[in-house]
Length: 229
Image (cartoon, rainbow, N blue to C red):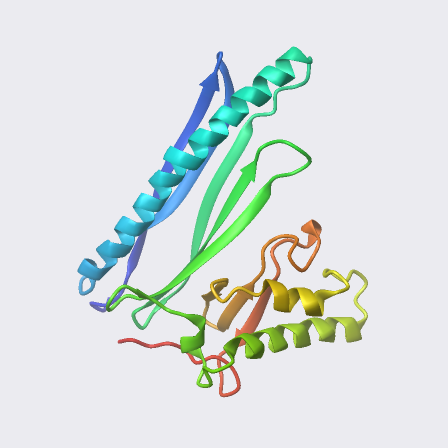
């Protein structure tokens, strides 16, 4: 094992929250803890960041949702409706861990009533030598118009599905406009094959399509593979 190798441990905050003897909200919040022989000082900054973010989500957002769950409980009981407890789950996946680069994404699922819950994705990529974030424009040799390079590649991928006449087309008809309007340069992560750009639910596709993802492979015409050690 090299001195720069990063080991990831799973941390979890979990609780069933009661009201009048009934569970009205359950939450599970997972977040990573990183260790390394050589880069522990910089990794501790990331560890602090993810720990604080997890605890603040519980302290602020989940506590607010608990108050909403109480209101929903009282309404359901008063109207002889079934009580549907809120369900909140945050999970993460580390998708890249080499050459002093870490990349990961978080999926935060919240069910607060209705037909289905909603999942929101966030992601981070890090240069662990100095605990600095990696921006998507750093991964392209031509940095002047990265947004257009990325959105053109995504539209081209979707166009190919149109030409293939797939039985179930998983995007809205005006996908070209929606890709450009909803592209966020923060919505990406790395894996061994390239850069994965994603969109949130409903931004360019129906809910049933899930979170749309698009691979931009490493190579001379695409993003470069980052190496910091």
